[in-house]
Length: 384
Image (tube, rainbow, N blue to C red; front, top):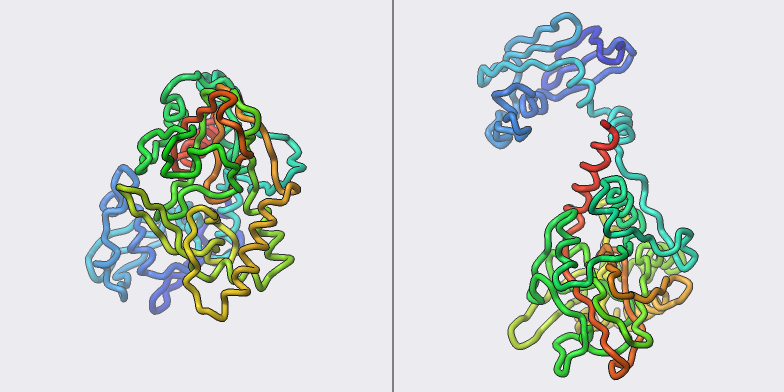
């Protein structure tokens, strides 16, 4: 292919320029080439790099360069005598021009963009069957893709037995144990250390914002539900944040820049963290939410900001409580709910614990395990 055929190369002070047969030109700094040499002396058979980047001479230069049959560049390095062999395919696939980086990203992209939603969620509550996902990789892929794309999903007919919630987490990742244990029980308690263990209504929130890092997935498995009420409420926090940003940009700025304190305390634990309610990535895009009215502490911010910050907090909270952003459903025995804890806020309606038993078992896991499993499943299905 012309794309992988080298026409010529030229040397400058600290970089190598390659001209390709298809007309493209690549520039490789010598430090980058030496650092990423694909030889066995530089890369272990497991794919991990052996060379310590910090130990390389920042001004490293070639003692000799040779182009072999228009498809290989050989370099003997001046400072350390190391010999590198760069196949043309490797060089083109590591070209750092904006054009080539974007092409590679498109080619290697396994995931479509996430889908934001409100109460008009077109597919309804994303669901799958337990027996199908444990027997069939395609069904498991579909269910995990629901979670990645929509931020939450339900699994039906999970065995109604103690500990099943952790077994589901192990289908794609690992349980994240906390002070609540490997598994915790969501049922009413006489002296609860958390409002979750009461029959009160709970406004939409993310879980454990006082932790650093926050568990990025929460799983809840219904074992018993004989009460009226207690319906699950889910909200796409990214959808709400996007609308909030458009309508109230100055309030969005406050919630994404001003630190607040989240805390959990009981007789044995004191966990707290300072963070913004809306988290932004390096491109100023929303990548995480921390919103939990039960865990937030009195605001410790400059006094003149208090009125405006309260306006920002209350406006955002009211949007989260707006039914137009909410999807509601009742958890029945055997159903398991999983949510991205940095995107999806969940709450519940109140219920009367005297009517019967309501018992959910929960655990935490992390998104990186789920995405790793999903990538491997998708790659396997593409290769098959």
